[in-house]
Each structure stands twice: as C-alpha cells, then as structure tokens.
Image 1 (tube, one colour):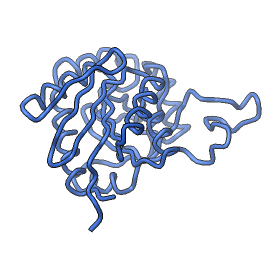
Image 2 (cartoon, rainbow, N blue to C red):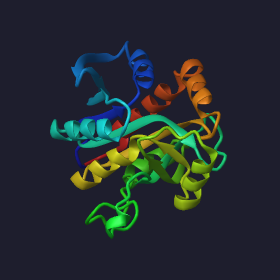
Image 3 (cartoon, rainbow, N blue to C red):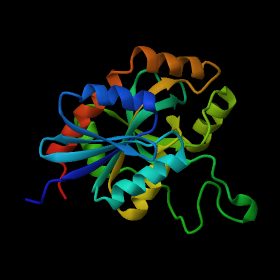
Image 4 (spheres, rainbow, N blue to C red):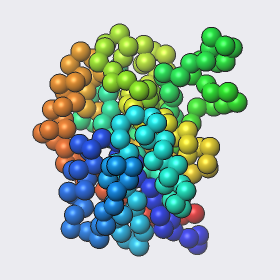
Length: 234
C-alpha cells in the first residue's frame, strides 16, 4: 500500500471564514503562528498535519499562500470559502468545481487566446481523486468555477460568466490556487459554499451568510478533510 499523505495545505482567504474554522478546531491539537501579518495554524489530525493559512482575499494573496505551502512540503492543497452562485444556484449549497478559470485575465489584444496565459494549453483543474472523495461524501461536483479580483454584484456580469464559461460559481481565489498547484503537480480541490447570487443583493446576502451561519462551512470542510486524510494515498 502506498504511503498516506502526511502534510496538507489549507487556504482560507477571508478572516471571517478563518476565525470560525479556528474556533471549530480549538479542542483539537492546534498550534497557531503568524503568516504575512495574518494568521495560520498547524492542525494535527488523524496522523497528518494540516497547515492552515488565512491568506487574505484575492488571487495574489491566495497564490502566495499556495506557493508557501508547497515550499514547506504540503503534498495536497485544499481551499474552502464562500462563492457567488451563477444561474440561480441555491443559497447555502456546497459544491466542488472540476475546473477553474480566471475570468479577469485577458491578453487577447496582443494575440493570445482570451483567459489563457502564454504557453497555457488548458484551464487548471481539480484532482480527480480528491473529487471522488467529495462525491462519495455526497457533495455536488460542478463543471467550472471562475475567479477574479472583483466581488460580483451585477446580474449582467453574473449572466455573462455563466453563459461564457458554463460556470456554477464565482470567487476571488480558487483559480489562482489551482493554477499554482497544476504547475507544481500538486493535487488540489476547493469546497465552495454559495453565499449569494452574484447580483444586486450579493453584498447583503454574503454578509448575512457570514454573520448568521458561519459555522456550517468549517464543519463541512473538516468532515471532508478527515476523509481526505483517511482515503488519499500518494
């Protein structure tokens, strides 16, 4: 039998998502530390270490956190957070995207294919084995998540993202993390919860989800993390 994964990286962008997660694991074996003027923690769980970073919101912060986790030896990187739902996705639902696209990256004026970086031949993707574990736990697998450095609260933009990419959700980090992990051959998956409809009510609904139901996402992710530690093999 192949070896079990011993060190897993976890990226949590928003402090309003990181703090409830830290609270949910406070009775476990946890050690806190500082990371780029924000917080991190080492969670020892079922014979593995999960290095959890509050990266900060946005693609640059997420990519920096991802590269740090890979540099210190994490053999899997996971992400969880809130997302805007596209095409009338139900608020509060959980999903795992299969592929990731940076919807705000565009070099087409100088001859490149829209949304592709130079030398890029495909969009980054989630690891199939991590998705199998998610599916076995009953999570929905969705085709595409789009990411960009903008909180989407405009129905016309939301409709464009769905129609252009067949995307189920939009966020500000997952595609950047996926790009780094794919380049480094590190398995990656993202658990996203739909907090809003990426429309004119998005800011209000997002705040309400964070304020009144901020425990559900950490609890669900912890269940998934435990299953990954149990079932994923090198």
